[in-house]
Length: 314
Image (spheres, helix red, strand yellow):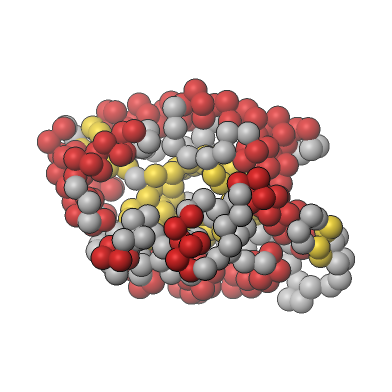
């Protein structure tokens, strides 16, 4: 199992955390693509929960780091025309010397669409947009550009300059039980699956791999990843201390956060609980976990390293 870092904060904290993660062996740093963070539909919380543009941010990180992977989790198909996404991805790939992974999703937070005046079509149409984005991007990132004709978008087989290098990896992420893993298998290099019951996780991984095989792709080449916060301690008291710190960072009640984490099957509890959960995820096919840290303020690096030393000693 390899571990990356997933961070939502202001740019300069991201730079500092990305450099630290690079120095300590984390494989990647991930950033979500949202106009508003969870809970920021409330004006009071919106003022303290930054949501920066990930493409602009990754362009900066590409020049501020040297080896760590840069992973976008994920660009909602409702937000941008795929031509804009394609051109940005090519530039970030070149600026980072091939370290960029472009994530694509259907979009799901209705409140950020409503607040910013972005159309939020029904789920079926959002999946159509997502599939068109994937087909368009897979064609445009190929060397040479092979062109694409979809339901909503088209791309002529015309030279693109600067030219794609063929290094940008595509990621599909989301919680859909059938269409999301199917699209991942058909188009993506990485399938990012939400934390959930490990039996359901295994089922979705198998669906993605079956879709890859049906599309003539190597199912074993599909990287399976997951993510979410790791909040842990040597015993329950130490876990509650870490939980209280995390709750303060995102401006919520600690007991509510504990219930929310456990309901959504996240990596929380004692070190033993978390290690058991990570092992079960590996058995389900997951080989990469992005550790999420939300909120303003410094990442608790010492606590994170102490946790990693127990749950991932190698």
